[in-house]
Image 1 (tube, rainbow, N blue to C red):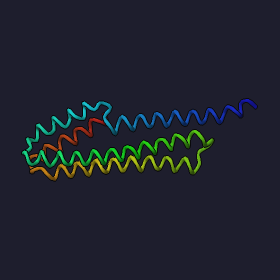
Image 2: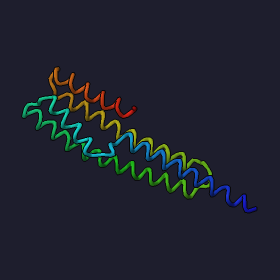
Image 3: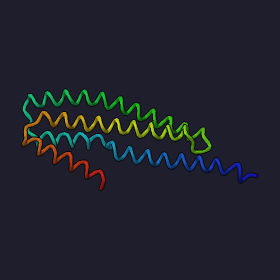
Image 4: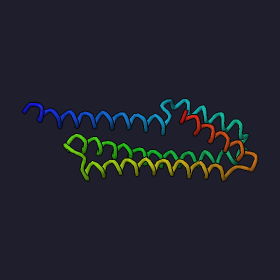
Length: 148
């Protein structure tokens, strides 16, 4: 009898650990763990682009808007993760509530990623053809570096 009481608890604990590991992986791969690395990337990129004063002003305005939008998406992602954690804690088995919570995490992550890519294309639109080539190389190199 003791075994039957412990089994569901062990299953829930295993699910919580798996979700925590997945959340850590997503956080490590979608957002730089070191904000200085993000700033360094921007500094190197903008230095190599040799932006005009007008381009700098335009891109800085885009950055402010994107930061606000990103904060909103990150808050939605955090809320979706919290809901998933709650569902794992209160549900003794995989069910439609857990599945919906998982889907909401994926939707929030996708929305953040789409907003980030739109922002990249917006910034790219402010560049001349030579700057676009530099920009594309920096962005592509950065994305590839996250998968190594």
